[in-house]
Amino acid sequence: MLSITSNNLQNSLLFHKFSMAEFYEIGRNAKLKTVKLGKHLFYEGERGDCFYFIKSGQVSLYRYSPEGDEKVFQILTEGDTLAEAVMFMQPAVYPVNAKAQTDCELVVFPQQAIVDYCYKNPRFTMQIIAAMSDKLHQAINRVDQLTLKNAGQRLVSYLLEIRHAQQSEWLTLPVSYSVLAGQLNITPETLSRLFKRFRQAGVISGKRETVVLLDIEQMCKLTNFPYIAGNKAKQPSSEALFGCCNLSLKWF
Image 1 (cartoon, helix red, strand yellow):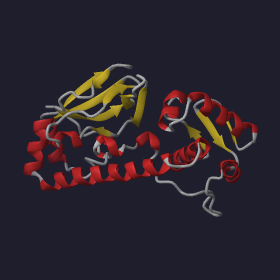
Image 2 (spheres, one colour):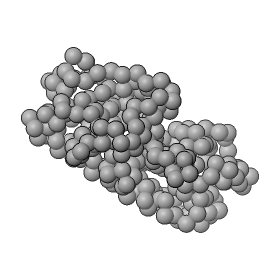
Image 3 (tube, one colour):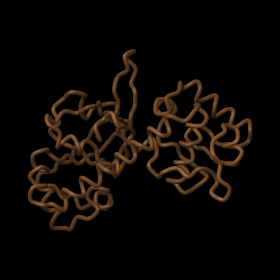
């Protein structure tokens, strides 16, 4: 039996209401797994026989474009779960590829054990429904953001989401430029030009993964992004693009 009563698991959306007895029950079938940087948890089309809780590290969910490029849908980090909805699909098949962006430590829950537990515990079933509903909300936010008119607006929206999540004007980007460009549906060259433009305009500073927001109002004006006085800008949801899901993933 695996002891999974760590604080990060208890603070997750899926398990935050669990009692110690429930942790003991569900932990009987869970296992710890280490996945090295660049290795896959699973591939698109494989049978979905388990879902994961990320104890540490980052995991990217992606598909290949017709040109053979990786199209990143989501970056998941410590405290996130992935593929829980797949456990209830018929047939249970992973709809995307999942690859470790860093060395990861994961808690693995087998499909049958989680389905059986739902039959015995309706409250846990409701928690899973709530978690999937939350991801659907995130998906709607993503669709809304990707319909913004231009690349600059999408970048501003992303930076404001990071600001909201990190509660600071000093931002640490959670993903690389290449991954971020894919999430914003722009080229890495365009992303670099936008950051350079913002720095030259004096609305941000910092280098690479560190971004300091100096003048949010002017940054919004540069891209014609909606600005609301007193609220700094159109307040985005806390579910940022790096932690959201896509409608086409069937609530993955």
